[in-house]
Image (cartoon, rainbow, N blue to C red; front, top):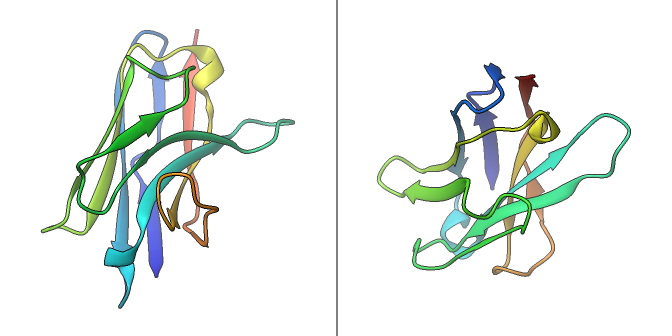
Length: 118
């Protein structure tokens, strides 16, 4: 399974940004797709995850109500819509393929940088 994240950039606090993850590979439909992030000096943390069917999602408490994960399987793409961004949301965002909502990520894409100015 191959994943490639894109769409990062600079946004002001309170603004919105959507990042995308292209998912491909022979068995990609066997995996849920998660978003994770890592800020400088901090450990990578879970953000959100969605099943392959797109019927179930789960969010970290820190982003619940502000971020929305979705997918378009016709385009092999998973999205993370981020609204009401805060400076503490700034990080490198990674997407990953994992076996189920609570599975350990098995495949990772490269990150995309999100910078939030205050």
